[in-house]
Length: 124
Image 1 (tube, rainbow, N blue to C red):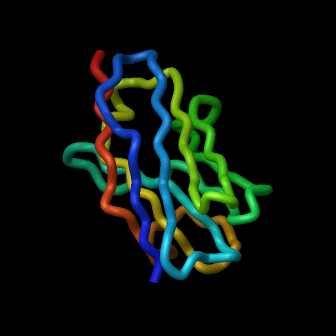
Image 2 (cartoon, rainbow, N blue to C red):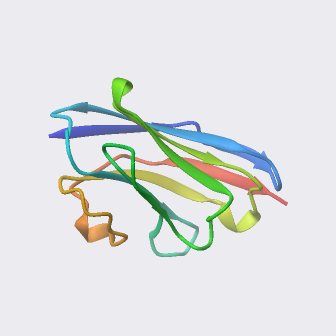
Image 3 (cartoon, helix red, strand yellow):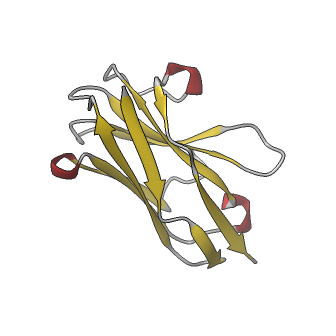
């Protein structure tokens, strides 16, 4: 089992920045991928970004490309999502998820472990 704990959410003004963190513990995955998903009010969960556990490959949703950066800290078993130029439509609960294989996928069903989520509210 892998336990994931997200942190760093909060209230931020449009145009501002925020960094989310996801700490992994338990049976950590030495190979695989870590992703961020989000679910806005009344919306389905959607893919945001994914990074390989090695940290050398990443992929972003078009809606966040150029504004968000995903990074891996293998020493701390943690993944960060740095968000800048935030918009009201970025308001959502952000979830961290881990999959046990290295292929970078955007579908939520591919992911084996999920965190509880952290709330991000962007005020306009």
